[in-house]
Length: 303
Image (tube, rainbow, N blue to C red):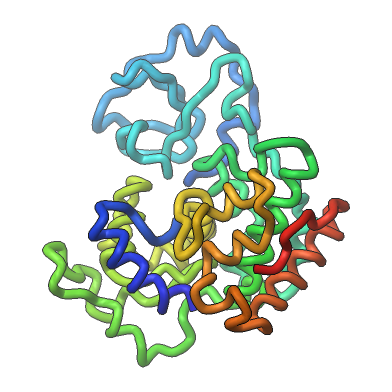
């Protein structure tokens, strides 16, 4: 669904020099064991090409401390957020060390029939790239945003059931060979994947460049790596307004309401009375999730 509108949307955004698509980052295991502040003081300088293991701490050339979220062969911490995360001395790692207002048990209740490729651990790992997500405002606001995001991706994937586009006949359509970088993974490799159905070769490149992951050459990561799959959706949610005036994240923390998050995802086709059944599906999921999390829905729920 999102893939269809993404092409037109991205064409406009690209013309304006903006990014548009969806995606995200690493595991939170690095923050599981608090690291003494003194280790920040003696953190070795990052060295390109050196082998780093999860939990290694380095001082980057930008003057900031980073912690390795995954083993890696010396990727740049300031670029590759998939393998590295900023480290805040004295906090035991990430300022939000794996915390999420939705428990794994609640996640399982929300998505009882989900594809095994979508995991709770993958979602929490992906959140490390976007510390403001479900960590802004009071407890009610945080739960409302989590419910809103999960309700929208639930609608997009029939309860996190679909991880890739069903109609394989469409697959060759998503290669724009006119782009200078072409379609190195193959003409039929850039079909819709993940909670927001990332598609088109140029979208995979944009998102991959943003994350420091080569999705242009390896688009299959979006369907094979649970964290990468969720990164694509969280990237869109937190950074792109789509056909709406604000992002889904901003809609939920500004008081604009759940309806504006719908508008940012598919407002051109669903809002203002265009497709009430689709809107009702999103709203019903949001109501169910907020009820499960014990918070009110807030105002402006439909769009």
